Image (cartoon, rainbow, N blue to C red):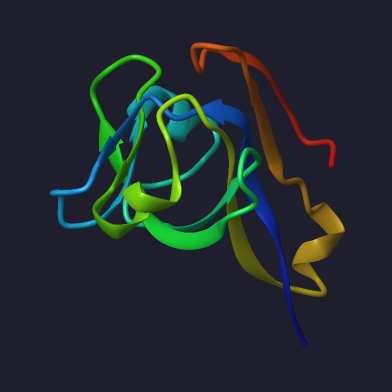
Length: 120
């Protein structure tokens, strides 16, 4: 049996930009994404705390410190300054769940890392 579980999340990130004219995806500061064990190209779910929108896209790495930019159609679902949660899921076998530890990254007002834990 397979279980779809939380793999990692970046909690309460602030949208720093929205680029309607880009092809698509979410641009995340590379250091921040890697701290959450999220590789470029991974599918993520975005939860907008400000307006309740939930949508999926894929990650690309950005070079700007603290960058969180929604691109393409996703740019219409956020406003600069909105607080979002970036969630990645993975599929695990029952045996893999014995050592299951998702990565939770809490960020501050400028998307700086405040803490990294494995607690849900």
